[in-house]
Amino acid sequence: MPTLSDLIKKHTDLGADDMEWIHSLVSDWQLLADLSFADLVLWLPLTAERGEDGSWVAVAQIRPTTGPTAYPEDLVGMVTGRGERTLVDIAYREGRICREGDPEWGSGVPVREESIPVRRGERILGVIQRSTNLSSARTPSRLELTYLQSASDLAKMINDGRFPFPEQEPNLARSPRVGDGLLRIDRQGRVLYASPNAQSAYRRLGLATDVAGTNLAETTARLGTAPVDDSLALVAGGRAARETEVEANGAIVQLRAIPLIVDGHRTGALVLLRDVTELRWRDRELMTKDATIREIHHRVKNNLQTVAALLRLQARRLQVPEGRDALEEAVRRVGSIAIVHETLSHTPEELIDFDDIADRVMAMAGEVSSPETRVRPKRVGGFGVLPAAIATPLAMVLTELLQNALEHGLTDNSGLLEVLVTRSGERLGVVVADNGKGLPDGFDVESAASLGLQIVRTLIVGELGGVLELRRRDGGGTEVALDIPLAQTPRTG
Image 1 (cartoon, rainbow, N blue to C red):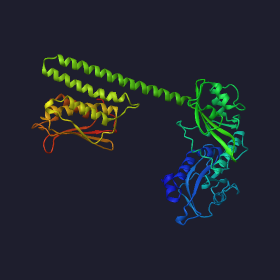
Image 2: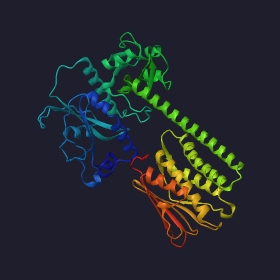
Image 3: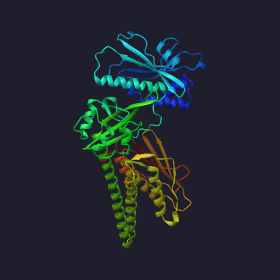
C-alpha cells in the first residue's frame, strides 16, 4: 500500500514544504471529519508534465467517528479524469468552498458532496471532498448544530490557509477528540456551549455549576493546581493552538485549543478536552516502578561489589595457592554480574546495549591476566541491545571463556584473542577464538572437569537454550562457538 508521501511524489509536482503542509493537514483532519459527520477525501491535481492536466488522484481518506460513513470502500490511490469530479474542479479553479448540487445516490444512500480548497499561502495545493451520509438525517440537536458551525469555520480556515497550525507541536501522548468533550468559546473566552462529556470533565475537576456561560480561563484557574506547562491562559482562552493538562480535585483533564480565525478575524475557539486521570496515574505508577527497579539494580550492584571485595580480601589472607585462585575466579564472576546490574541501574527498561558490557568484561579479563600472558581481547561485530535475562548469563559466559583462554590457551603476550559476533534475525552467534596451544587430544566438553566450562555449558545450554561447541581453530588454537536464540524466553531450569 503506497504511503501519502509515495503518492504525492509519484503523481504530483509538490515540493517539500507543500508536502509537509499536506502531512500536517492529514494528521489533524479527523477533527474536521468528526465535526462535519462526514467522510473526507483529499484530491491532488496530477502534474501537467505527465500530460494529465485536469485529472485528480486521491492521496488520503478519513471517516467520521461521529456518524455513518459515505464511502466504505477505500479511495486512496484512485485517479479520476477531467470533469469526473465537478465540485472538486470548481473549488480548485475558483478557490472557494463549493456546496452546489443535489445529494447523490450512486452508492445507494443519499450523499451530500462539498469541496474545500486546501490553500498554503497564495497557492491551492488540492481539494478536500467532504461527503455526508444523509440516510440518518433528522432534526439536529444543539450539539450537532455546534459541531456543524465549528466545521464550517474550520473549513473556511483551510480555504484561507490558516489551518493546520504548522507552529503547533503537541507535547502530549494523544490529543483529545471531538467525542471526548468539546467547548465552544467566544473571543473573550466565555463558554458558548459545552458538550455533555466536557461538562462531566469539569464536574470531576470540582466545578459544581455549569461551565457554559463562564469565562473558561478564570473558571479553570479557580478549580485547583496550575497546568503542567503553565499555559492555562493561552489554552483556556483559546488564543493559541496549544495543549495542556489541568489537575484538580484528584482529576486530570487534558485540554487542546483550536483558535477559530474566520475572514481574518478571531471569532473564538474550540477547546477539546478529555479526562486522562486513570491514564496519568498509570503513567506515574509506571514511572515509580521504573525508578524502584533501577534503584534495586543499583543496590544489587553495590552488594555484589561488596561481596567481591570481601572475597578479594579473603583471597589475600589465604596461603594455599589453589584456594586463592578459586576466590579470585569467584571475584571475576561476581564482577561480571555487577557490570550488568550497574548498566541496568541507568536504564528505564530491562534492555541493555551489550556492546559496552562486553568491552568492559574483556577489559577486566585482560587486566587480571598474568603479566606473561598480557593480551588485550578484541571484539569484532556488535551484540546490539539484549534483554537483561540474556545479558546477565552471557556476561558470565564471556568472563569464563576469556579467562579460560588467557590462563590455559595463551602462553605469551603475542597471542591472539578475539570475540567474533554475528547477529541475524532472532539468533546471536558468538565465537571466542585464540591462537594458543589448542585443545588436548580426546577433549570432550561434556566430561570436562573445568568448573568454568561447566558454568558455560549450564548457562548456554540449560538457561538460554543455545548451542555450545568447542573446536580447533584453523591455523592453531581454539574456538568456542555459541549459538543463542533471542526470541524465546530464557529458561531457568
